[in-house]
Image 1 (tube, rainbow, N blue to C red):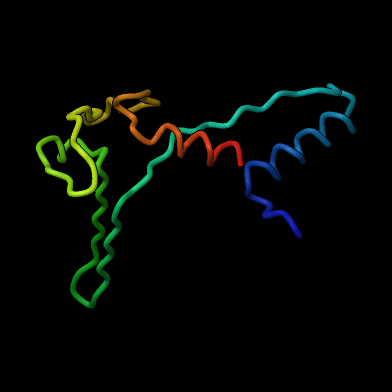
Image 2 (cartoon, rainbow, N blue to C red):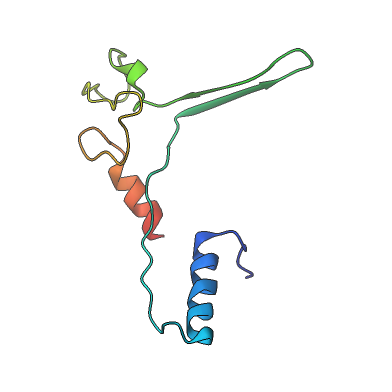
Length: 103
């Protein structure tokens, strides 16, 4: 199929073609940025008098004391603005992030 022009893989492919065609280089290395959010719930309201959204994730610091029915709460949560590329145990979703980036 046709690649989406704004997909990072498409951009990397075009960059490689440009490097080779221009003679700047014949090899370049690109790495994925796996810093992104994974939400458990997203709610959107858009009515004539109200527009809002609400996101929730077990990773949110507001869920420190929440009791989960399908898992246990380790209490490890990145604080507000401290979540830049966290690792386990703070980022309990590291496995799914890695799998998504490698796909």
